[in-house]
Amino acid sequence: MELGKRKEMILAAIVEQYIKTGEPIGSKYLMTALPISVSSATIRNEMSELAELGFLDQPHTSAGRIPSQQGYRYYIDHLMPKSELDEEERQMVQSELERCAGNPEKLLSKAGELLAKITNCAALATTPTDEGATVRRIEIVPVGTRIAMIVLMTSTGIIKNGICRTETALTLDMIENFHEICDHTFIGKPVSDIGTVMIQTLVASLGANALSMSPLFVVLTDLAASAMQAEIHLEGEQNLLHHREFSDHVFDMMQFLDQSDKLERAVLAKKDDALSVSIGSENMFRQLENTSMIVGRYSVHGHDGGAIGIIGPTRLDYAKLIPRIEFLTELVGKLLTDSYEE
Image 1 (tube, rainbow, N blue to C red):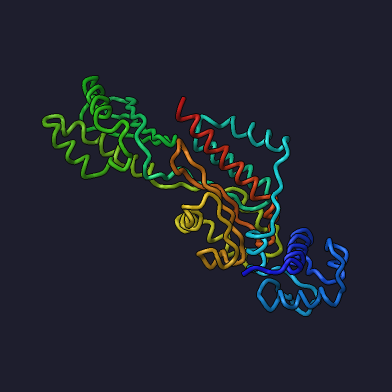
Image 2: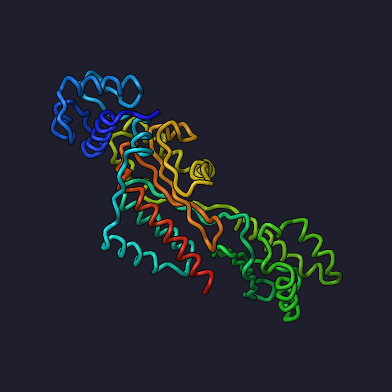
């Protein structure tokens, strides 16, 4: 549904002023704020029609109006101007993230930390979950007579490691054999190929070496499974305590943010969208029905990677925050890709 130009101007003015003040907006303010000359009676009529159409709400008995979820949605989709990052902010973010460029986990944690600081919301970042990720490197590092550390690195820059205890003493032949098998069987292949069935077939082909080598490949299987699962870095959840809109719901929200499985589902719900904005009831969980979630997706080496976003009140400065999340996701994807190519 499209509104007329005058209704659009009134809705935009109400949304933008309400974002600034958090107070209901009346016709007196709009008479001075609108770029056209309109009588107070006409403005009140237009506001009443916008309310009847579902774009505005009237809290309590106030004569003023506030945007509804539908009003915010229309504003974002049709009316919102975007503000660009100034060069100083851009350089600050880039400098902070470049310091972590060689460590994907640290990079994503820092991205969430910066986003929480910039937005005063809860910020989150997920590790890459691309099903097309391939095995970049596998290493075995002896740390004892029968103990070794297995290291798995994927094409999306994720590094997983685990300790393995073998039934027999580690020998140079075992280590070289492990490297040879991994180079021939796994390097460049999808991480998802490293599964229980494949490992069982592989171990069965080792003959006399099966007993000594199987613990190494069991650990490798666990690392591959872990690498395929998203991990969420959550930062700044305490920021939500400062938003008065959450005074009656903050306990439920905090409990929800502790449930990483549900949080992951909420964040990754719109996996095909480069950037998504979910307002109020558009979110898939009841605990988020009074929030807005803005989520951007980053790519690594041309493949879908993970997500970076915020959870905050519906009264967000969308025009300011959306470009910042877009910049951050693009930068994270570039740094992860550059790290992979080195």
